Amino acid sequence: MAKIALFGATGSIGTRVLQEALARGHEVTAVVRDPSKLTGGAADGKGCAVVLGDVLDPASVAVAGAGHDVVVSTFGPGAGDPGALVNAAKSLVGGVQSLGADSPWPRLVTVGGAGSLRTPGGPLVWDAADVPEPVLALMHAHGDALDFLRTVPVEEVRWTSLSPAAQIEAGERTGVYRLGLDDLVVDTDGRSWISTEDYAVALVDEVERDAHPGVRFTVGY
Ligand SMILES: NC(=O)c1ccc[n+]([C@@H]2O[C@H](COP(=O)([O-])OP(=O)(O)OC[C@H]3O[C@@H](n4cnc5c(N)ncnc54)[C@H](OP(=O)(O)O)[C@@H]3O)[C@@H](O)[C@H]2O)c1
Image 1 (cartoon, rainbow, N blue to C red):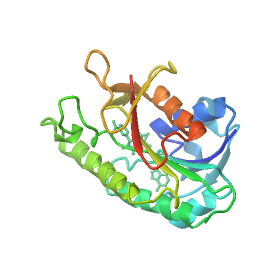
Image 2 (cartoon, protein in one colour):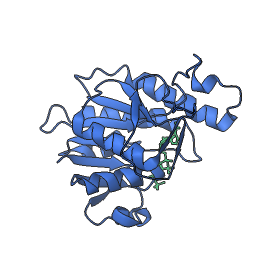
Image 3 (cartoon, helix red, strand yellow):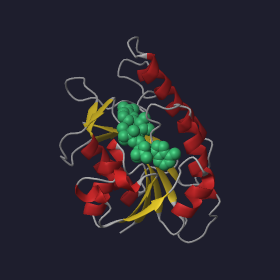
Image 4 (tube, rainbow, N blue to C red):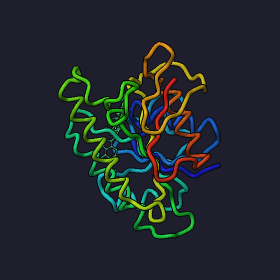
């Protein structure tokens, strides 16, 4: 059983990660801005601790992450500035780093973006002609956050970033998925997709297995 501090627990992906982690018996602290937003199923705060926190504040990350095995961030900027993704990555790393090698020294697992993944034809997802501007900005902000994480030695912060498939939407928990590293995972019909539920399965599997330290990997069907 792992002790997990989860930022973004009220979000679309974070809600599923919270449910998945609690269902497996992990001890989760939901780090939220507004506890009243924790609703639905296992995500109603029952069975997990709830604390206030701001992922953009390294001191807040350190306070929330202390005493946990893993800090997970499913943070998203919503309609706000996509650049907050880079600030969040820096804040998460800074916060975890400031805890030093205390026991336990939390690992860091973040949600990434699919834009920087290579498509089967060769170009990156964000180079496709039909990506709308707001989505493009989000993709590149995720890319910048990943570039930053890649400068962080795992001996200093044991980080991992999990990029969703090109499409991720609420659906079924099948427990079946395929993994890639920097290449988009596509199914036999050429579609890259994953349900938020199965994304959460893959993320909590990573929390349990620590299989991808210091790298970005991706998940799809
Ligand atoms: N294919 C792809 O590459 C793909 C597709 C979808 C999503 N994503 C990425 O996955 C991540 C999560 O997506 P999502 O759809 O679950 O997002 P979401 O539903 O908008 O959830 C965002 C979460 O971040 C929290 N948050 C915002 N600012 C915060 C702050 N300063 N401190 C702490 N928490 C804060 C929100 O809390 P509040 O409830 O308080 O606002 C919410 O829980 C995003 O980074 C998104 O870009 C990638």
